[in-house]
Length: 342
Image 1 (cartoon, rainbow, N blue to C red):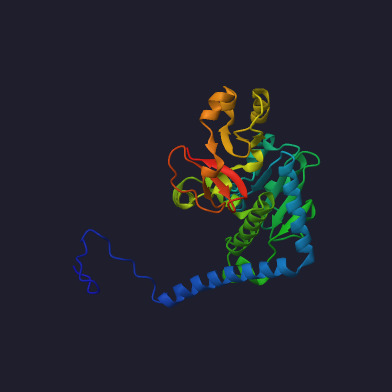
Image 2: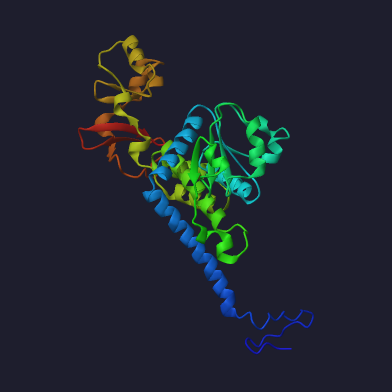
């Protein structure tokens, strides 16, 4: 048997493809896909407008971030919980937070009632994820939560029992036309889970930027906490290709001890205390630990300041010879630091 399209032999043991009903055309199949994708896009667009223009949504978001940040700054953690698909979102957000260095843990509502409530500490904050805002398992959990524990509700229904009973609400509110029943007649979660996940992702990145302001530092931390997979490999490649500059690795000149040429051994020892280098008479550099052995011996291994090569502070650290010493300077007279190759 041959396939006319590709002229390759088809093994006889393979079953024949099932022919879809006549009324199901490729166009109708693609129309369903386009409908779902367009609905997801519209849901995210709606949330963007909501967070851009609605003051109550904005205030609740800021309050939620402050509650989570306060918990982290006082030694607590963010505990996320939810049932079903919302529980899967909780697991994903916990994973994202941990990879960004944000202390977070997942708590299954049913397991919580069977001993896992012990994961909660007084300094923690609880984030409940629920599309309806009325998940029975979360409602059953409420009487057993520690008194005073801040509760945040991430929900598509802010005006709901769980939403109204929370300290703050992270809104993933969608109009009825963008809910699953209105789109395809079945309440199988699609737009609602996308909305909750998107808001949760926004929370993760917001917290990360608050905790670590510098983007380069965040990138370095993320690479350290995510060493595996393609992301880890990319980070290692970037790290290996990035050459440090002398400004980042030098011993600042202000940390170099200073002493006059005619100083006695006690004065030299004082100048060397807690230092790596000592400059004698503004003309010779000595390793501080050698000054502690004998001033006469140290004088024999000093390095003339004028004889050392100068490099710029933003020059990339090149392949210096082992033990080579360079001065980091803006110009011949403005020395910023000293660097010795390992």
